[in-house]
Length: 314
Length: 322
Image (cartoon, rainbow over all chains, first blue to last red; front, side, top):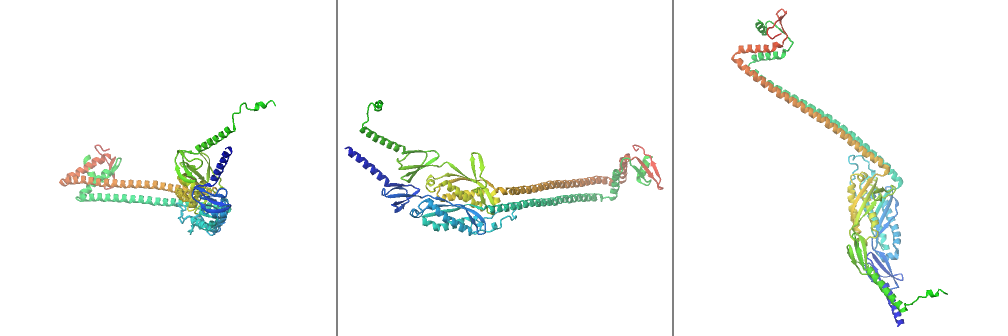
């Protein structure tokens, strides 16, 4: 009895181990290739779930099914227009054919090495075949330089050129070129991106110098625009001032003249009725105005004034 | 030896059969406990859990206590979906509230602009996991993916603007474009991530050219100042001139009214006199003459008479005349 019980326990344990090692789980982010003594067996398992295998003789090789990162080293590349730049690219890829992947590169680290070669040379080929502006610009969007100093002409000569491709298209070319080689490793390239572009150190210093001279030109331009605008406004001021003053003078004179004419007309209409009486009346009015205090009046004996005065004083 | 007796237990209660039973019971209890502890999980309020059964996606659960099949048949992967994560570019927050810029030699902030100049741009991306399942299943290193994409997108867009635009007027436009573009590309990867904000923190010219950029600003200010001063002077002078012009015209108009009114008044008076004069000419004539003398003579100091020989003679005046 004792012996039987012990045997039963051992058999149960062996069964449990066998059962356990004959199943395996594939997670959603994984894909699996089964190998038997290193020989791939059956189709890769791409669907997640519980699977069976022959215990002890079949191995489970797990591969990622997610989007993976490739990060390149930065490369010094000379563009077609002889600009020296650093280019730092990055790419996204996935293991599209795990069987091929297993047979060629085996691991992700191995794949990274292959991708280094493929993508670095594709990047170099494409960028060195194009002008810098094609790599930098995205579209032919019209660049506005300075809000109010637009004819400054501070653009790098080549920056004026229209681009034929632009960064997105060049990146597409890199991806296309690399995608020819990637499938032989079971790799699918999803996306290639230029992460950074920079001038190499000496060029950067030259660019800084150019930027400084550009800014100086713009600053000078602003200053001369300011002076010009000022002179313009001053000219306008003088003109407008003279116009206003002279117009006012003209209008005033016209008004005065018109009033004088009207008054003259009024006088003429009325006084014309009896010119003789008018001159008498007007003379008297004039006396009132002419003769003031402390005046000495000199009269001739024939004047009517003398007559009156002598008759009065007599 | 003497101490042998101390080592021997006073009573031996454990028979081999008892030990076997105890071992089996212990194993069962252990299995039960493991089963118990692997048959539930809690999801925190800021999380969602993606549940896998035999590695296959079965459901996404919300916060609270949940049960699952034990012994690793069901697995729950917790994902903080409400948390807003932040990635900084071109600078790092050293401690909360204190911001320190990256060293300038680091190329994270430095980028080429469309006019082949160089600008230093610092920005922040805030994102949230919008789909826990996509976030877990589709991309391996989500954070690095967001960083790489964000850098690439920002540089691509800045490459289509001039350095002046990047530094000044187009900053918001660039941020909006970068956010949209980044979101579109993350969706292409099925990252399950939503960009909450993308903000340009800082956009500066490189340090060694910064002075010249500041000088442009100064020149712009100077220009504005010159123009403003000239405009102010213009307004001052022209308004004064206009005021003076109005005054001149008003004065003329005043003169005109006065002139015509006086003329009319004078004429009215004359007409009245003329009327009387026509009726009795001689008397009126004398009266008018005398009235005038009356008015004039009191003011006069003396009256001299010059006769036909040119001799002056003082004429004494009677009455009020001096």
